[in-house]
Image (cartoon, rainbow, N blue to C red):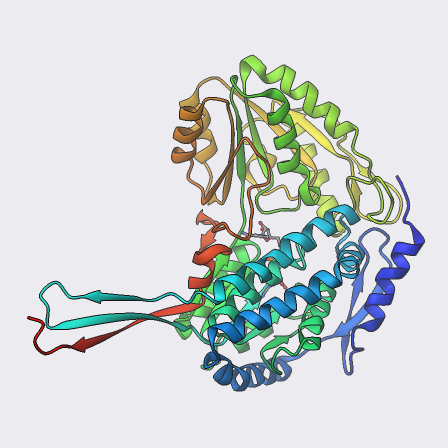
Length: 486
Ligand code: NAD
């Protein structure tokens, strides 16, 4: 295992030192690579959360009346400021979340792209004009901001999950209260501090850090000033929030858990299929909601595919995300490592073969070996639950119909992947997968310009693209009576 470059760690700690120190009660933030305490952040109680709602509501009234151009300019200035601090943001992400620095840089590009994209989209406000078929009136359809939006984000992409909610909310004219994950609050705090530096109106973006997320949501989602909740996280917590949202009939966007199937057909380009599957599995150390969870390979190419995937996984360098050349950092915490141990043991007991890896790594942080399991039975835990770690679980299939049926045999429906060189097959299989998105011959389908989101128990609503903006807008119409038109 490689250890950290001290200069990079020092850079991250300098960034942390620049974030305003908390007053009052705090909770700790740790580096998952070492278990070391890296910061204490404010542990806001319900009163502080409601004060943030108050500030947001006051700022939101003026923001809703700003011109589209003003909103676009503010977002563009924030984008420029974020990209000017790319290295600081990347260092912070690696320090609090653990991913290798190169991946943190990729997250900064991905995360800031939402801000740029919505700065562009903000300047093209939607709306239509329609003549009624019978005449006598015209209908003007307008889009109004939905109002005060509460945003709750997970730890796996501390910047991107925040920006893909904040940017469309601001573009639409909504003020926000954002509650980052308690494991990784620093990146959001820093990104919002950069927004304040470029003059985003006071009170428009409010960060509430807390070690008690349920008290936060119980109080805030029942407040009548709140009109929307957007959540990214587990399906379990999503259900709790949907229940809470029902009290005041809030608009909801829910980006929840996944159980992505990868389908590798015998007519796939094997190099692309292995590279794409590897990326879909190992991006973010497997801690992604669209990570390759069940890898189905057609039996005629199964052995060749497994051999190559195993070679690729076995050659990943594991270590501190600040060490040069590292491809896999730590998992987020000890529970995540325990979960990998349990999933691998269960699969092994049910007859799966461990081709490489399979064990935690010693040394202070939360490390687990890149692992390949084959002959995974469908009833193994690893096939039925979201793995959220560097374990590739491979199963065989014979026919297209069988592969699709098995891929769809889950309550989740976020992402799917298809590898084949036959265009008809690619599109036909993609059509039959019950998911919100499909990667065709590629392992990283997300993009700021694409409508990301799930079907079934993977969620409701979309993030990114024009559809992501609509999540923060209400559609209204004015029926304008016209004399002499009918
Ligand atoms: P989590 O559900 O435990 O936590 C997510 C967020 O919810 C955190 O900020 C947490 O503090 C907060 N939270 C927990 N209980 C809450 C409550 N009662 N009220 C309000 N907030 C509460 O999920 P996690 O472990 O941080 O993230 C991993 C999960 O997120 C996985 O299931 C993954 O698939 C999912 N995820 C989905 C997407 C997507 O776009 N669909 C993206 C990333 C992650």
